[in-house]
Amino acid sequence: MENALLDTVYDTKTFLEQAKRLLQITQEHLSNSLSGSNEKVMHWQEPEEVFRFWEDFFNGGSPEDFFSQVFQHTTHTHHPKYIGHQVAAPAPVTALTGLVSALLNNGMAIYEMGMAPSAIERIVIDKICQQIGYDKNSGGFLTSGGSLANLTALLSARKAVVPHDVWNKGYAQPLGIMVCEEAHYCVDRAAKIMGLGEKGIIKIPANQDFSMDVSLLPSYFEKAASTGIKIFAIIGSAPSTATGAYDDLEAIGRFAAEKEIWFHVDGAHGGAAIYSKKYQPRITGIETADSVVIDGHKMLLMPTITTALLFKNQRHAAHTFNQKADYLLDDSREDPWYQSGKMTFECTKTMMCLHWFVLLKVYGEQLFDEYVTRQYDLAHSFAKMLMKDPHFELATLPQSNILCFRWIEKEMSLDALNQVNARIRQQLLADGEFYIVQTTLRGTLYLRTSLMNPFTTADHLQQLLEKIKKTAQHIS
Ligand SMILES: *Cc1c(COP(=O)(O)O)cnc(C)c1O
Image (cartoon, rainbow, N blue to C red):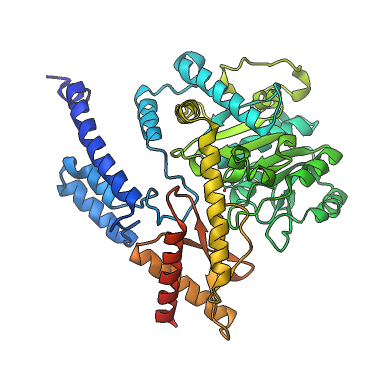
């Protein structure tokens, strides 16, 4: 009697029944979402309203209805009219790998608590390194998100480049990094966490197309150096988040080599172009980077959260959190590959490698090639569609599957257009047929789309534009 609740919770027959029911409604949800038929991407509600709904459910709802209610009351990435944030519509099989990871709970903090995932992760990492164009000396690990991976890479860079033992002794002189003003905010945050301060983040202005203006690198470097800042790393975005513009990785790589500083590529979104035969030229030079970040949960069809952090030299993956100063380490691996917990920020982490392994084993790199190429192609078609219509204006030609545009009308002021476009986006959100977002670039408000869903077609996008025009007419 004492353990009645525990016995119930761990009853395997009950689990099987629950799982069968859940699979049934998951399949229904998935097929409704994917077909996009008379289903909305989301049913928008104010935060307080949603809070009251779930409070009522907690107090009076039936647990049997829980999963179906969650499905109904949230945003559906599998819907082809989901074209908002850069989140994957996960390949359904990766929900199953997620289940196995959750159930086994082998956190990989130490080898015997993750024998299978340690080996599986090594295979996955080796495959990604090969695809980048790295040689046998490369390595890395999976970690919990692009933000954490960027921070980890910069910590590793500092240890590799700065002769002073900052890890143990703190800063002896002001340090800095160089990054385009358009980079993801997590780079800024990583630099602040590392104590570099505002002065330690050398922001390089962007070109007209929102990529880094690499012609400014020498002068910005000299200016920082003349104020006593030692720059130890430069970050290239592949691409940056707001507009999807790729920095010139080749030029940044050359500059980094010349100045003997670390070259890091934030490819959280579009590092996935390593898999696309057609779009691989976008990331030429990535193989010269000292470290690269690629998110599985963005352009590689995997669920939140799984990120690869790759190093040209495995030794740098291993040294980040090592207590010893870098010059005490020899070139051999300090810790064997199966001690990945020593290399990662996390102590316990999920078995995120299962997603990568299953997709690569069952479908091969070909799957990612097909997906990335299709989405980038679609953005080009969308751009052509927009350029043909005098009521629309592109922020810049798309270089990935991210595209920013706005509704325009001659003789309307910038302020008025900003207001109309903000209201368009608000009404689309409330309507729920489509999901798109917005961003402000150099004072102009744009509607922002990320073509994430593998079943979004040009036809859906045409419908979106018709809807926007009708909405705009209504507003103005
Ligand atoms: C999304 C994104 C990040 C952050 O990655 P998370 O996995 O969300 O932490 C970093 N950089 C770029 C360029 C991104 O697009």
